[in-house]
Image (cartoon, rainbow, N blue to C red; front, side, top):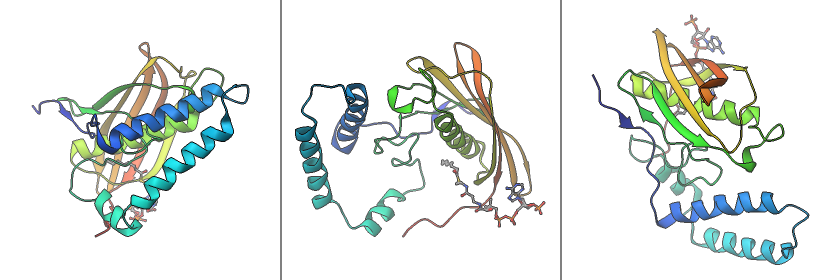
Length: 205
Ligand SMILES: CCCCCCCC(=O)SCCNC(=O)CCNC(=O)[C@H](O)C(C)(C)COP(=O)(O)OP(=O)(O)OC[C@H]1O[C@@H](n2cnc3c(N)ncnc32)[C@H](O)[C@@H]1OP(=O)(O)O
């Protein structure tokens, strides 16, 4: 039996990960502030643009950055679900379980809102697509999403711990079947069935 294993990148406390954590805070704070805020938004916009100018000035060329992003064969640090370098990632950390499934827990705030006080359905789809993909990696046969079928059983709450699961259920030639769910308080909010096809796009070199 395989021991549980962390399958997603561990966020660092410093470097770009720390800056990204601050950026996530800014995204959340802007949304929290809204148009009724008494903060000086013109000055804030100037400050944020100046931060972005500084980052752009010191960034490597785009093709070099793409190569760096895909260096190594391990976990990604840039993806929009688990990536500690991606400010739009919640980020979710996934653990491969001994039973072959993957599992993670996260709490989503205002940037991910759809219906009042609840998670946007597209965000659940994003998280589940990625989680099913990681479940395929953990199972040893992976591919690209060909179909993703979602069932939204009940609204998914913001501000509460959500458990995200995924497991590969079958492989037939190049066709891979995988399922998963988002649960809150032990109740399934969203379930997913995915068909993946064993195919990988070449990594930038
Ligand atoms: C760790 C990181 C995790 C990341 C997880 C993120 C996963 C993603 O989001 S991937 C991005 C989203 N997906 C995509 O962009 C995929 C776009 N689509 C494609 O590239 C292609 O259509 C692809 C790869 C799905 C299949 O193309 P191709 O490799 O040419 O397969 P093809 O030969 O047409 O079909 C193979 C078999 O699959 C079947 N198949 C292909 N697509 C579908 C489909 N949508 N529905 C049902 N069956 C399908 C075919 O009928 C065929 O079956 P059979 O062998 O029985 O005849």
